[in-house]
Amino acid sequence: MKETIFQMERYAEANNIPIIELDSIKFIMKYIKLNNVKSVLEIGTAIGYSAILMANATESVEITTIEKDEKRYREAVKNVNACGLDKRIEVVYNDALEVNLAGHSYDLIFIDAAKGGYIKYFEKFCNYLNPGGVIITDNLKFHGLVKNKSSIKSKNLKGIVDKIEKYIEFLDNNKDYVTKYYDIGDGLSVSFKKNNEK
Image (cartoon, rainbow, N blue to C red):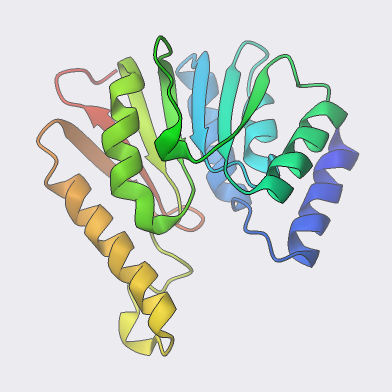
């Protein structure tokens, strides 16, 4: 499995595919372990890197991960199978906003997909959270650009940073959730439902 993970890191670098920073995934793996998380929903599989590492946190955690890019989806399935984790990781090929998860609920929901969809993902998937569950979001610093907006020349990048700022504002003003921010990796938030914190 170590060899597969190493190959995934090289593949991601060679093909310019964003994968989670090591400090961030270590934080999530520790959270899974300490809080006895049994079920995870991940929005944004990419090549399956974070799903595989989350599955390595404990032997009892099961993961559903959603990816809408076909090439990345196929790569993720291949990697999950290579690690022998196909019984515990289900890779779903679909747009997350179109997926129907009726009857399912999760201890942890991890949002790590298109930044412009963060608010919609939160609003949709918070309905699938178990009591005491959390929603963790990645990339809230966006390579340091969120705190350094004036240095951005690209209109596209500026647009992404604007969307991240709107998402942070949405979290801060969300009356149902308390959010804690962590300056780890590319910036993480952990949102707990009010009156429901572990």
